[in-house]
Length: 443
View (tube, rainbow, N blue to C red):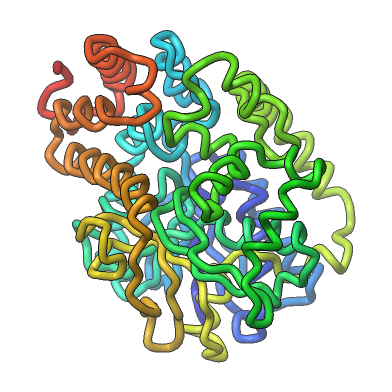
């Protein structure tokens, strides 16, 4: 009987999706599902939700919950991490302080000033989880879903031999979107996607042996497509390769779309896809979740689960565990790993997102990849800044935090060096409760 532990099980919808997927594999029908969270109320709801899914599917899994991380991890085969360090009232400062200095950010969970500070708050807690994994389940496979993915995975892999990798929705989610635009079945779309998390590109895109990039160039001319992803379509037009992450996210990682009000209006306000790129919209959505989650989840608990909602979704975790612990079916996906020659023109040790295959022998990178020179210039710059932030966390060095943000493309495009210095100092002070591991917070 396998044991799967969910750290941050209070991420209710996500926990439900991952459990539902696990239950679709016969090998895990009688597994132990251990839920752990530091929020007692959310944990109780998580347990009720998982029990409902197990019962609806007629499964024999055992569902347990605890606020004790040691108990949760003891003997686990698989660990899934979905934590958030600090709630919305902490996160909002990552957006609002840069905004004072002219740096317009809408989500702020990946890189740049907001992503770096989210990472710095989260890193110590993630390392504490991994240290407990080393003690209580050292052979477990650890799958991280917490952002900022690249920095957290690099930070952990630099300090442990635990088998940990990061998973994201963007590669498979974008592929599904492109298949829809192209009018082909998603199962027939073949691709090689390489880069770093939220900044990877489809180096090739084909369907039954036919190059689909010419067809995509035509598809983006259709009004309903052009209006859905304005930032990514513009990047595709000029970079010639399609990027993975949504327009709102992507607009934060470069200097092209958010440095002037007219550009924000044109590219970041009217997209019809998820995340229109406006911070006010995102903040309201997050605050509404905080206010309404209990009522909405209770409404879900009170209804029967339709059979189609018990079918496997698009998350990779269950397929990975099945390949290792279940029937052994090999599974290809894109994983986040420290670069060990996998991408020839990204720095060694930086966290890259590359195609891998997982089977009973574990996760293996499928090949060696080289980004085209212009994508290398774009992606490697972000990778270098992320690694600078990782070093800052490992060494407790606030100066490295400042130097990383000083080189951030969006921040550079709107701020002077002095303004960036003052902004970072203000953010350090605002986050001091979470940065006690730093030698000094004065830069």
